[in-house]
Image (tube, rainbow, N blue to C red):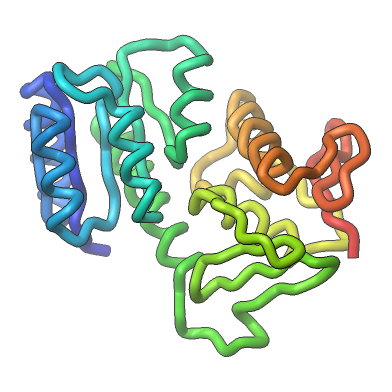
Length: 232
């Protein structure tokens, strides 16, 4: 599964190490130590995934992520030396798909990259007919081919991960989807206890964008201690 990957980190040793491991997996790497250079690359190259350090000398990774989401829907993985939960939430709010804290094991990062690319490829496949790639009910329409979602004819600006979550829940509407199942399906990664927090944050953002009341939701209902359900 080859692809073009952007790597941005002002710690040259880390950026160089990540580049070596990714090149060993046959990815094409665009490596930069500053945000300004990365933005030029984003504007001029076709990218499949971005790995962004949060703390950069000129433009922070959050700002770069935000600018990526204005025009692109490829996966974004954030790197940070911080462990505060607020940083993770900030990254997810701005459209990041995954988050990894330094120091990290290169092989773990490679696994995350592969998982994100698998998910992105799966949920952006155009090899489906209309019956398979469109879900429509109760004013909600999701189109897998265009990766667009509308609610009562109003377009919702969903991140790729938010779209994937909503698609999976709607595809299995009428039954409870366990948090573990949802995480493994969308993130393609092993489920851990703190993975539930990641799922919860994305569900909350989805409800906010849909205007769905968390106390009395019309679409995404929480089944406490189990998972989530979209009624038929």
